[in-house]
Image 1 (cartoon, rainbow, N blue to C red):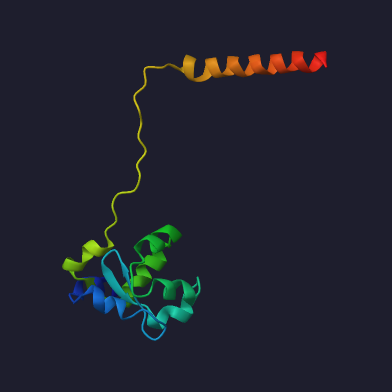
Image 2 (cartoon, rainbow, N blue to C red):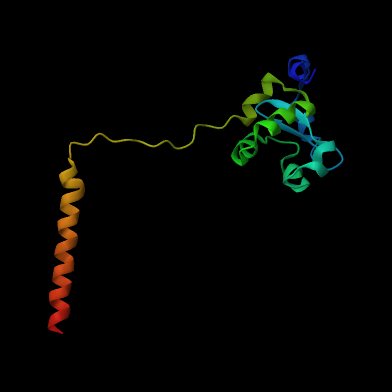
Length: 135
């Protein structure tokens, strides 16, 4: 039955309704557009109830993913699933893509990237040694 629970839930909740459940008496969180009522799980949460209370009424997707929950923990979420965030409200939690790493094409070779700085470093070290030996 737990496997089918996610498919059975067809109720949509609006963002305003989610925000109303942001305390210890009623704690709902959004994780990847799925709404979970974690009120009864607050005291059982291995990371402490404060972690969930901080996320209550809002989007916990990033926090949930960043912790690196086990597959057992991810399976456990199905028990608390009550519905989905209404499609019209999903844009509120969409984040623009973060900074990406840009790889610049370069005509320079490993010679200029490694050898030239190494030679410059050795030259500075030799000059310092000569200067320090004179004094």
